[in-house]
Image (cartoon, rainbow, N blue to C red; front, side, top):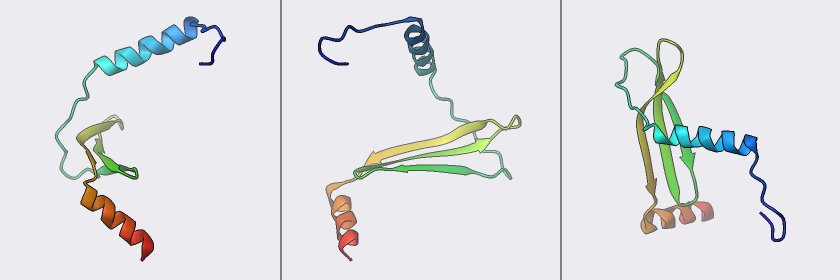
Length: 87
């Protein structure tokens, strides 16, 4: 958004907003792992935080979430990261 530029909210914006709102209103469902099926691990690492998702495909081939984790690095962990960059 810029100053002195009129804000336009059209039908496409409304449709996208309703879609996002509907998605966010549904809580994520965690399922139990199925023995023998491969696990899928997603990792998102930032400078000061890390997030993971452990998933597994169901019978239809759709990925189901098994576990979520996210955390911010402690000050000591941040120092270790900086030291590794100098070595």
